[in-house]
Length: 255
Ligand code: AP5
Image (cartoon, rainbow, N blue to C red; front, top):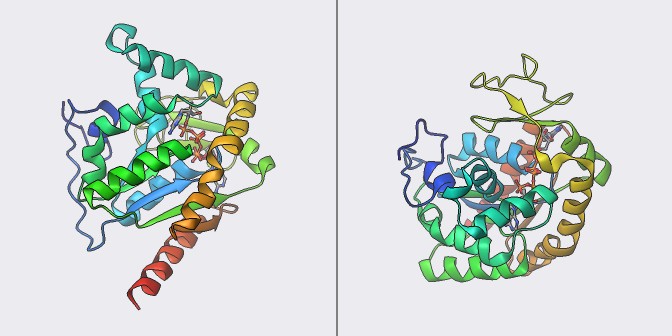
């Protein structure tokens, strides 16, 4: 299967049977970044902006599970079917399912265009598996960007989020409203509210983050890869802060 446009991420979303039309980034730096942060902090929004600036591909594990949820049940393995249920409840998908899915797409991690990993790794076991794979392949991570925001702002962002059913562009009812109510600015398709943005699932997701994902901050700090970024304010400002931090790290490393 072939991607329809450069933002389709077909190989990531659909696995080994798909091919991307994405041209390898022409920039001299291959960016291999992990975006960390609680659900709703704005990782997907930032990945979209950083993709435009750095060329690296936005690889979201949540997007793969959501794409699986839209397929017919007979096309899904039992593990992927179970994964869509975990996601709906706001619980983490088991590590083995996540890692099998990422391994199947490891070509995306080797891609010369680089990557912006969003939503993976999410547990220490996933982080260890990724570290081993990157070491085996000789692919160093550039940095791990950890976004910080208060719990109150996070809940407000999640409850107002609307996503395009076609191109996955993310909006917010009040902070980033679409020009036409209910329709995507980019492709005109319908916007929907994610199942896991209901209050009961939001609670479970925030607990899962505190329990399983927050320890990764220390894991990557210990490896000298962590870069913390304040995630309040307009998306463009946060993106500028991220780019300035990355530049400063690069300059420090080459001095
Ligand atoms: P996933 O899709 O990864 O969701 P998440 O981590 O919960 O993150 P979100 O997509 O909810 O938020 P975001 O930080 O990307 O924020 P966004 O940019 O959209 O995972 C979903 C599920 O899949 C998991 O719960 C789990 O079940 C499963 N899963 C996935 N990966 C897994 C893994 N590795 N292991 C196990 N299970 C896994 O922004 C949110 C809203 O805020 C939007 O409306 C946006 O417009 C708005 N906004 C963004 N920035 C700003 C700003 N600066 N100011 C105002 N509004 C803003």
